[in-house]
Amino acid sequence: MAPAFELAQLNIARMLAPLESPGMADFVANLARINGLAEASPGYVWRLEDDGGDATAIRPFGDDVLVNLSVWRDMESLRDFTYRGAHPEMLKRRNEWFSRIGDAHLVCWWVPAGHRPDAQEAAERLALLREQGPGSGAFTFRHPFPPPAPLAGDGKAAVAGANVLG
Image (cartoon, rainbow, N blue to C red):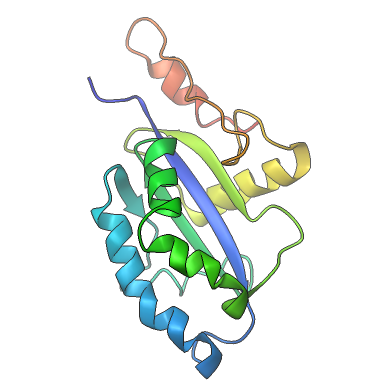
């Protein structure tokens, strides 16, 4: 039986310079490779892109903030990609390209299987985490929460409940 829920994640990063600048060249040069590795990773489901396949063009937090919004099978799959393989190399270099964000910059939440969150939904989850701290509706790697328990019957109530903030 397929899982009733998948894990959505948003992380944001404030650029030190415009994406087209020489200071961002190494980041840009590695972006397609890292995204390709994510897409080939076990447990990867989907990531937000514009109609042209460009995720960097989506800027709901301001012109200087990049977003990464993706859906994974589970927390373990996302954690494996994030902290193993080539991705950690890029994480080690993030201070070359991005400034620190004082508030939470990463949020995870469970979505019904097949649901693809948009930038507004992701922004609402990040705001929830910032306002209330980790909980079942918005959490982090350090403070994860399990997916909602399936209900007896057709499970529609559980799926509907996953979209309720708070």
